[in-house]
Image (tube, rainbow over all chains, first blue to last red; front, side, top):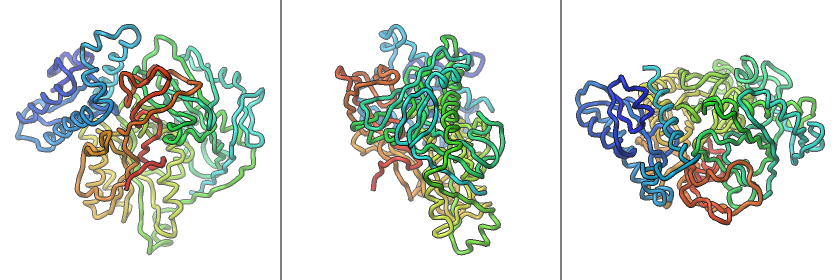
Length: 136
Length: 426
């Protein structure tokens, strides 16, 4: 199954098992963690891409469809991703000054060429995700 | 395999009516170069500029840096599989315009970082401020995709470097350095008492702006494999442009890999440098398992006693780094890893996104979250307005006086994970 807050990923994989999250990257991570606790394993790395969690508004992650017993490696991976969100948010100047800047409200405020940055973020998340699962 | 690098020292760069190298000065015929580059149908315009050490110049957003080289003798040509035909390189003579570089700049997506300051505080953080740079500024046609734009920019950089490199073909080098590797069997016989050391070179391979090509092959589609170190010196590995400026390995880094150069210095005296293992950093977790299985398997097959592992990037690659380290150590082979840190602005947070007790010998390239203020520059080449949205920048990064406050991660090569730059920690 795919968990994403990226509409480009949602629309492209509309016929797949997909859960769309209305929220930011942290919300995606939290929901992924819930599913890991239900027994789903993570298949693609939550910290994909070199853009840090607080510096991108979008994230797409693939998990196994059928729940089995708790996968501790997956749990560790998603917990580490959440810890990294906290780290960048609270202990980096980018996090402190840009807090919540990548939310929906910011996208609505931007106009002209600047607004297209959100499309670029969607595109990068999409390409990293698509490349990751192309071989599956 | 034996490769001679002939260094032609370049101390100045100028535009002129004829492209040539004369008395340590690189002269470039601007129009000739631009008309050659404009043959690419994806480009609307190309312009070139010069940035020299000590000038009040800021280049941003930087995509790649490439050193001009030319194959004088031996098989193949520079950048095999991308510009030249596929043929095994790494032997014979290659001339290098040492002290010169091609820098490409362009806004492929909206959040592009990569700053090179040629003077001031920022210059101390990037090795490319010490070079005589020919900067290529390209604007793509409106309708092209980011993928086509990235490829066009990549090829423009390589073509420009080959164009300049060719100017060194008939010139007697100021200095020649020889690099020779021998077969596995010969190495065992010749250096029976020396530790056998290999180098696991991890290559970015996640997708757009996160890719690396080996003999033209997209590394994300390759299994872990081995390569002769001198092949890198002839451009067998090239960068697919950058998102993470501070710790992205540019093509210049691949051509001048410091781990390889240091291992050669100690080869035959302190250690036996056996070979380079190249592996990828894919997003799909099964790929990570497969690739790290293969790097540890190859290290064991080659009978290595020690391995140096360098990574590229943050987050996702940290998992590959630790997997490689853990699995190679489990074979009884000692490892040293080279990385950089995202340890928060005060350096107190956990540095990597993954860890393991076997990773007990670590070299750091510096803390990418460190904050620096870069003073205003007289001249900007590129698009400075991107600074507010780059990785490492924020709203207000670009101040009214033209100075910028950013994290080191925005500066090209600042915390390089091959150890190319000067930052570290004890």
